[in-house]
Image (cartoon, rainbow, N blue to C red; front, side, top):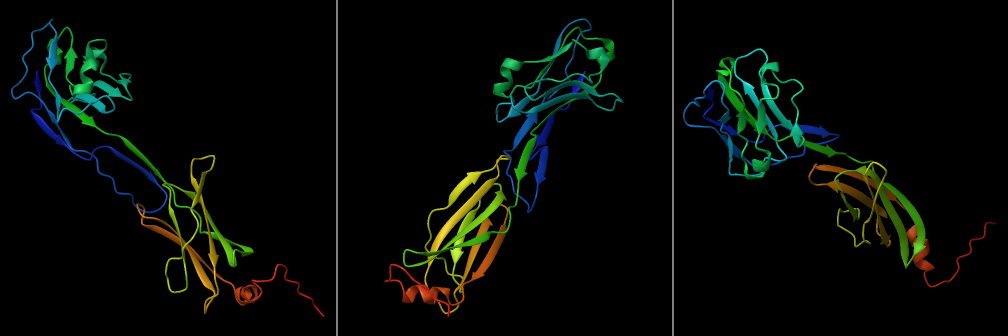
Length: 250
């Protein structure tokens, strides 16, 4: 009975679900180590096929698969989602294989085979990997609302929905300079996606053009909306000292 001596595994089993740009992930590297020499077993006795992780990180949350090399039905033992999943196991191994569950936290992924049979002779491989599910979402273009005259200027509110992870909201003038704005209000919808809102008080400029930009740096995603307020700021700035502004149409 033989096992593979050494397999190097890195950035394994990446399951990627996304809407939008690419999200970069770094998965900690580790090695899967087996014995330096073939394992010898006696028919009718139990045998342990050694397999360890280096460094000895916990394997409790990992996917562990033992299988026979170069066979039509290779699965010998499967551990996934914190439990054994041997529905598709080779029938001759039913009830004869087990991991050392109490030692998984120490990186021990060895397999015990009970009551060794002559038909068990062959080459075995221990495969250990991560399954990572990543959910990302790119939200809507921001919507700008004009709340009218407040605190000596025009109050503008920018809102964007459907983001994950949480984005930043930036207000800018026509030259792309960041404007001092209020804190970003953050909420989540029924799907756990972020809704962001940010308010700014703007003063009159040469263009009266303002931009709300929503950006998610991890996704390298940017959405922005531009608003123009022709003449409106000028009217309110002239009458800023008046408690009430009355406009009469003739």
